[in-house]
Length: 217
Image 1 (spheres, helix red, strand yellow):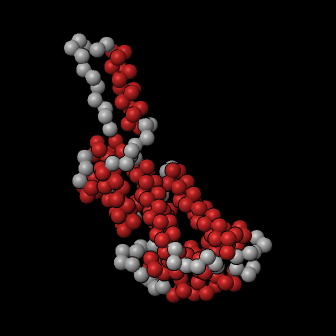
Image 2 (cartoon, one colour):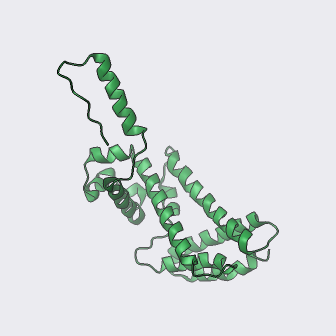
Image 3 (spheres, one colour):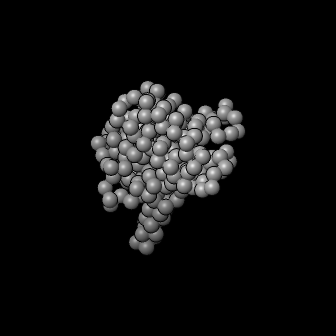
């Protein structure tokens, strides 16, 4: 981001100095930051560290070192570790949604797409480096005085319910799509968490067998 101050031969007045300082601070913290290679590298590095090690165990200095950026560069893009964590959560959700859409493309336009969400989870769980849900992993590590992260996690979980509701409305004629969607969400979240606890995929497979039962509710 451009933050250089135009220099004149004469010494600027105190008022001009203060005006320029306000402009710089405003640009740094309030102007939308375009995606840049440095910003992407910071997010990718933080995402890898937060996901594998945990939000509370990763410090800003470790992110700076592994991303190979200056501290000033990081703070030009993110005003705090909390803001960086929100970017991590957003990045992981976008990755998950894109992957799910591509995965379901091969499914027919029927209720098998609902079961397909659990198939996708089973597929993810078999991948090397899979460490469960980024949001569920982060939630217990976040202090209550960091509301941005907690709000982002809730938003993503609400979006998951909405995803199931959309699938139910399209492919399963039930009386109360929202209630069924919430049950599918709870089934999915339970399967996700238990598969991590047991380090096996049987919770996902067993949960998937219950999907047809919910679709006739």
